[in-house]
Image 1 (cartoon, rainbow, N blue to C red):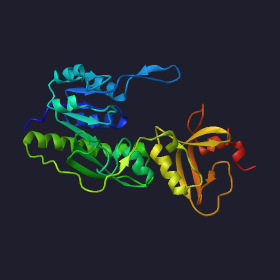
Image 2: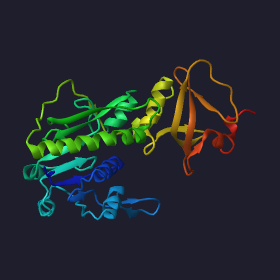
Image 3: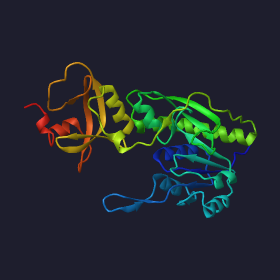
Image 4: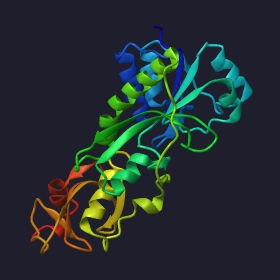
Length: 300
């Protein structure tokens, strides 16, 4: 049985992981669709998404439309002959014109209807969840409301951050996409309606990043995990904006200050800061910080 010809759309690092897995399984898309290069860095130089570089290395055509649903974009995509369009962490809204042109399946890193929306992994980790998953949906007009073709549960360790969670979810996503495409080709796939109470995973905002030290220590650590390694939970430390990248929760009396340990009081217990980054500086361990800019927080 031949597999359906598909185009693959994605921009975020998770999409690049899934594309790499598909390629390793000898399932190459006819084209990769991603967002245009964006200005980044101090000088605002346009930089390509990582998935574009990976696709070019494998000799795949790359399309970067400003609007994937514009008539000229749809025509350019259809000219490459896909039979289905796979969308994974793409970052653009797919309009009705493209929905009418091709069957579209969505790779969504949650077990819908739990955590529909833009930031399912981040919201799940903020909520302290360790049972995540990947669902392959048939795209409809409603956000992540379409019928389910494949769903796979993935256990994520309690100390994993969002980056590690996405790494663990990617193989399940690859298996789900392949099973869905094969089922569609064979005519055996049965789409089923979602069951359960929906919850919505809103995009992470600047407010979501701010640490409230009156909250429980475990809640703060979950926030740090959910926003690492690319977004960062934010606090003020010695008058400077500081990102926390790794942390652990503790209970009981606050540990005494030392030259290696940075423990900060929380609403209950305390938070061991393990890795941080102050504005204008590189990431560093707590020990490196306390021997440098954070000397005032170390033991006298």
